[in-house]
Length: 189
Image (cartoon, rainbow, N blue to C red; front, side):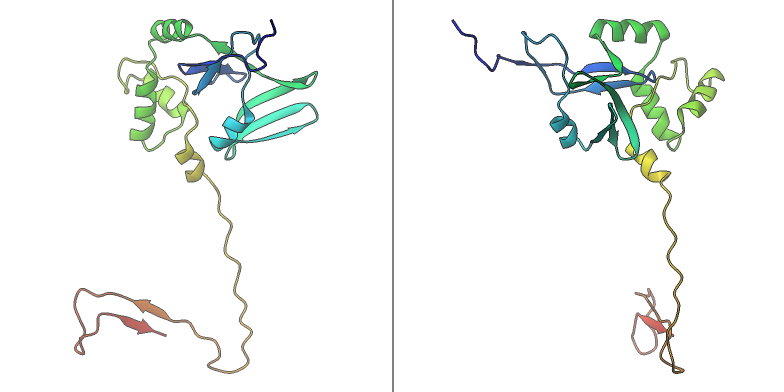
């Protein structure tokens, strides 16, 4: 009897992966295929979640915005993720051993105006953030946009020939108090 080409799969709970730099990433919408020996990550799913990827010279970078989320090295024709899968029991044991609460870490990060991990670690060592230890932060989109540099506006060079060919104006309003004529807007030149 020939096995089906598409093996049955089932959904699993979210899985955590320890990356090459020590950060923990959570993968959701995981599908389990019993006959498959390796864990595979779908680039299409990552693309649907707002990630982009670039592979050159046997090295793949998976990015979300400007942040590199995952790295992979090419072996044969597959890119292998630089990291290791952490099982649910290992996560619970590590969190309880180090007395880390990931929800508390994110909460303090937001409450303190999106402070860096280093800043939270210093405050935690001083006992200012309670008894729980501060863990690693996940990707924070607000931090990326907040620290993003913007280009300056180009300098306007007037190309006028006459006296009144070039002027600036400003329309202001609505005003809470109307003028004597009943208008609530003001135009200045």
